[in-house]
Image (cartoon, helix red, strand yellow):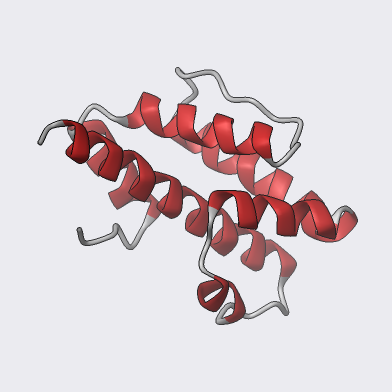
Length: 118
């Protein structure tokens, strides 16, 4: 599986395979497990999903760093990928981390979907 390299590609692929709602569902599940008080409606527009998640990540980095780390752990975002990011600009960092979270959630959904079809 080649992972999408942009948010737009990820959403395009999720919509093409009719898995966008499952992506949102998987994200909601991991947010609950990480004790993050955020839940998305399955019909949330992709841009809203990205912006709200990015705002949440930004606030977690600034105010609840242990909850931020817990979210990354729960979603299973690669520590190497996180360490490779530039932490100088918090807005840019939160945007990049948001994409890594969505990319990892997409990977989980894609694998579950393809393992069920075997």
